Image 1 (spheres, rainbow, N blue to C red):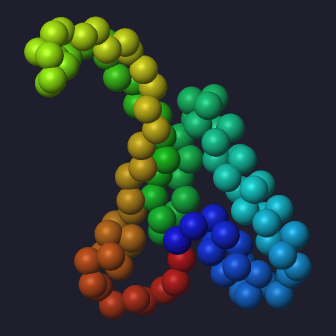
Image 2 (cartoon, rainbow, N blue to C red; image 1 turned 45 degrees about the vertical axis):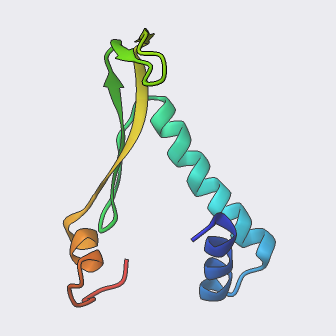
Length: 98
């Protein structure tokens, strides 16, 4: 699903205008991104948890040349699905919709 597909789904489910649906999606994604930038964890019950992990600096190897390359430390975003989402994806009966 793309951002446009999500906007279309919200448009049908809420009977709002396309501009309002787009504003809703942008507001949710913006809030999520800003929370992650601040280092906060975002938990959406029934869906999962978004967070930031710190990766340490390391030495890697260029597979083409074999030369060592220093990879700097960095922060990466991650998503951990909830038990409900994992069960739904793995074929459990859909008892409730998120």
